[in-house]
Image (cartoon, rainbow, N blue to C red; front, side):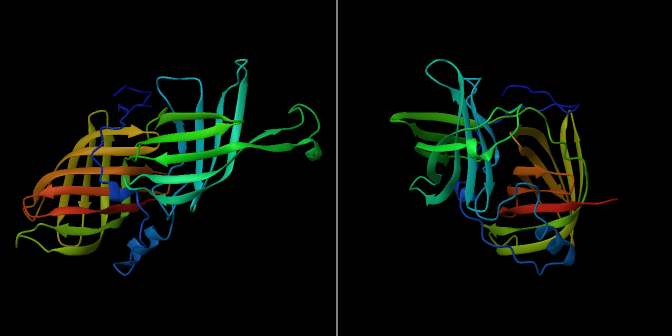
Length: 293
């Protein structure tokens, strides 16, 4: 994991080593909002680039072994707009765009597949008067973007009969600091409790107090019935954050956790949470609106 510019908070890139369940890449089912007004407000206020259809692919993607070209991906609903910036056979910059690359389903390996036509455009000089009649669009082939993991993907595309397949990861250039106080909650499912906890789906409103420093992240969640403190190391790939560590709660629950797919914005944060404790195995989602003016 290579260190990256941190704006005061150290972190690292993370890629294919994540042990994240494949089901988290699937389409997300709607979350019930009856738990509390605060949780309902959070779930009803999407963060930047959020998508309710699949894991969000929006990011700048590249191959770290081939720095100099890349792919910009922007997802809305079940459709992504992507641009490939690369070089032609004369080593000159060239770009291609897929403006309607649509979610085509999940393959037998749990990979999310987006597919559509690929175009090349030309137009008037950027420093002169823009003439829309000078813009031309030509389909050069097709493109498929395959999200293999929360932080890794492959792209297959063709340009005038030349087929290309590349591996990609989300590119990181700055850390999203999670520090803050949030009003929200968490929803998820308890399993393998062995009589020591409540099996099944659970919703709970609560607040999060998060301190994110060079030494890692401490997240204190105060729910209706108890308070849990999660502490661990932070890593980030593109815009997606990850915290891995241990936790303990005032009701005696202790264990190891992984919070991942964390997106932090000025309005709030959201992510996914799994843990194994002395009571149950938990898998769910968490988030909240940033408190204060």
